[in-house]
Length: 166
Image (cartoon, rainbow, N blue to C red; front, side, top):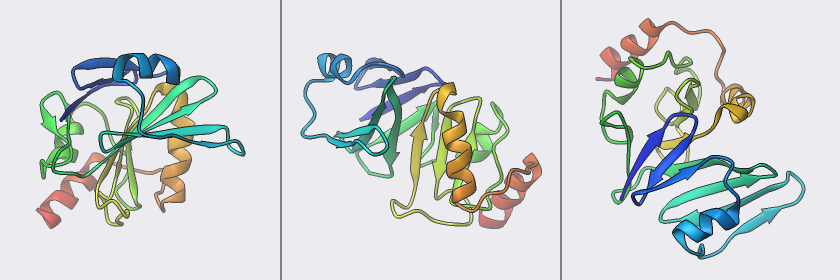
């Protein structure tokens, strides 16, 4: 299945446009009922699995979508196969300057894309793409710092990493 990222706005999921801020009911009308969903009232977050992905909802609707590395899922932005192209970070860097690759997560804030496991540290899913709207930027800055990242970066670090890791 192909998922196409629409920066800071949403995704094309199974050929259907989903926008951040949509209610869980609106998504259900478009995609059908999820197999299940879970609610965490402590942090006011609801999440539901959908075709290998996880949709997260807050008080303002759809907040983000996690897309883990799976053979059946392809995530694209401008023709870049984010999960499978070895030069995905370098190619995405042509559209936005990423945060450093020194933690578990790397963010492209202008694109609304968070990459997990693409840098020095790994995540349990091996690789993970999370797409998010502008309104969630602070949460992803926090996620980046929690994962060991430091908010200092130059694009040369990304290029050096690719030369080293190839």
